[in-house]
Length: 162
Image: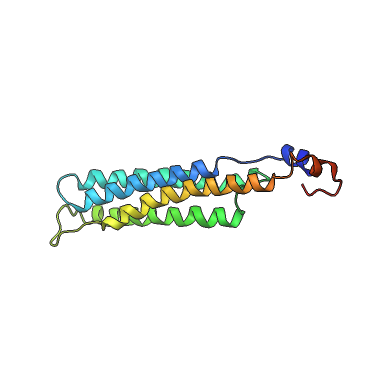
C-alpha cells in the first residue's frame, strides 16, 4: 500500500556522492597543508590551494544541508546528515585557518621543521573509505526492508508491512 506512495515522494540519492566529494576535497586540502608545512617558496601557493579547497568544501556542505529540505525521503536521519557534513567541514575549516595564519605572518620557513602527521592524511583517506561503506550499509538495509515484496505468500497476506 505505501510502496506506491513512497515511490511518488521526492528522494535524494546524491548524499553519498556529496559526502565522497567532500572527503576527496578534504584530502586534497590536507595534501596541500602537508606541502605548505614543508616551507619554501611555494607556501603562499599552497595557502591559496587550501583556501580554494575550503570554498569548494563549503559549497558541497551547503548543498548537503539544503538537500533535506527539498526531499521527503533521505537515506540517513536528517540530524545525522547534518552532524556528519558539519564534522567533515570542520576539518578543512581548521586547515584553512592554519593556512590563513601562516599567510598573515608571511611565513615561508619555520625554525623547527613542521610537518603534518602521516596519520592525518591516513585519517582523511579512511574517511573516504568510511563514506563509501555508508552507501553499502544503506543499500544492504534497503534490500532487507524490501525482502518480502517478491514473496507470493507475503503478497497474498493483506496485513503485510510496507
